[in-house]
Every structure is written in C-alpha cells, then in structure tokens.
Image (cartoon, rainbow, N blue to C red; front, top):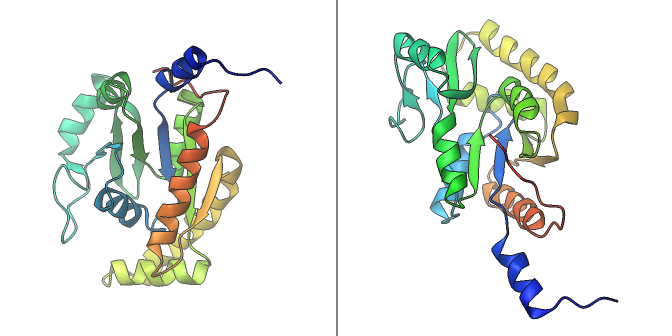
Length: 212
C-alpha cells in the first residue's frame, strides 16, 4: 500500500474544488424550506437568488427568496446573456444569474442553486459536473396537501395541473445524482441527508470540476 506523504496530503486538502449543487424537485416538495433551514443552521454556501417575473407571495422578501423583476427587465437580461439557465414556468419567467455563480466559485465558495426540474435538465447539459439532488415528498397525496396549504386560493384545475406535472417530473429522476425524501415535520433529517451527500462529494478522489 502506497502511503500519502505529508506534502501530498497538504496538496490534496488545498486543491479541493468548490461544488455547484443543484437542488430541484416538484413544486411543493419543500425546496425553499430546506434552503432556509440550511441557512439557519449556518451551512456556508453561496445561495444563488433566482430572478423571476412572478408576483411576491405573502412573507417573501426581494433578493432573499427571489429577485423579483419585471418581464421587461428579465428580457433585457436574457438578451445580455446574464442567465446560466432560464425558462417560463406556469406563466412566469425564472432565471439563474451566471456571473453570481462564477464569482462565488472563483472565490472558492460552494454554491447552491434552486431550480425546477425543467431547469435542472437544462443545467445538466451545461454543467454536468454539478451535484444534482432531487427533492420529493413521501407520496403524491402529501404533495397535494402541501400545495393546498401553500395556496388556499388555488383552483382544483390548477392543483390537478401541478400534480400532473409532478408525475411527469418524476420521469426525469435519471438525470439526478441523488434523491432525498423530504418528510413532513422532519426537515432536519432532510438537511442532514443533503449534508451527508455534500460531505461524501468532498471526499471524492475524482473531483468534480465546474467550468462555466
């Protein structure tokens, strides 16, 4: 067995590449709640704030939950190639700012990006070396309950549309590296599992190298 010398060991530690983590899953799976818990517990990531044209929901804060902009501003950013990925979802535009990610990675920070499944599929083609995590509820019934609780004014047809889309999104599981079940009232377990995934990735010998 070949021993790793002290100098070699030091170089291994110094050359750890920052990770780009893509957190995705169906609407209602709890992505925002998971990220909020990670921030609360002090996980030292750069959390990318997605730009969107959709209206703010009650309790949301601009540049914390999303960067809320007009459709005109959004289109200007598209033309300026400011987004790593963008898409129209449920009638609203969402975009992941490219420069923000590049700066964080260059500084050595690990980066977390939250996107819908369609966005994750696009990012898989652009940055295949990112860590792709799929977040899901234990059952479709629980997903439906969460969607109802989140928006009491949602029509039965809207709910049916979102659940149908969630079923379709499950067919994209193969593009992800990991799948984490987000159990109701146990978000701590979910965060712990994501933390374990990241720890495991940090210990890989064949490191993921992100090129943007």
